[in-house]
Image 1: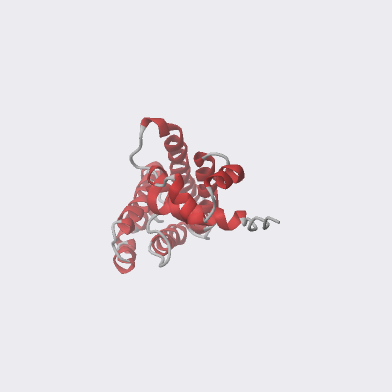
Image 2 (image 1 turned 90 degrees about the vertical axis):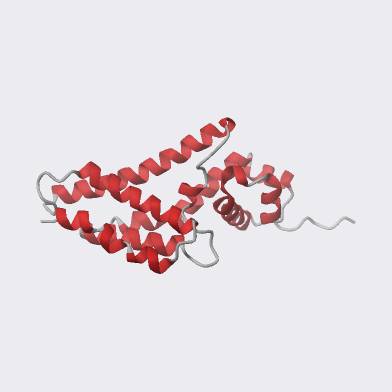
Length: 197
């Protein structure tokens, strides 16, 4: 009598796939890598998640609900300076965490790509643009609430903090340590401090 197949833990498999994609990017993660990371045969992975692209999209959603959720939470802080400061600090702590890939999965998973993967890369770009917009929206709300001086360039300030956020990911990926990254937050807040009423 044949033995029963090993129980399949879909959640654990998704977690392991997320870490593989986060570490090696979309194109850099092969099906063989995903098989090795999850311990599941490729047929089982396809049956559970569909294509590699479907698995990647689900892995990104998991990242954004877990490790990557810090920005959304931070932007809800009471005043705009605290919100931006918390976002940058929590980014550093997330991007340099031991036992995790360095940097942001959404930033680092797809910088260069083959033409065949254009739809995946465009999809990731919409996620990065949405983060930028959420920062701009938070600064706009602060301006409406009278926290910022009249005439503050809300778009430029929001774009600047999105660039800092994404830059932190690249720096962390390149091995710049937590202490150095935390040290740049003070100077990075100077434009916002100058705009506060």
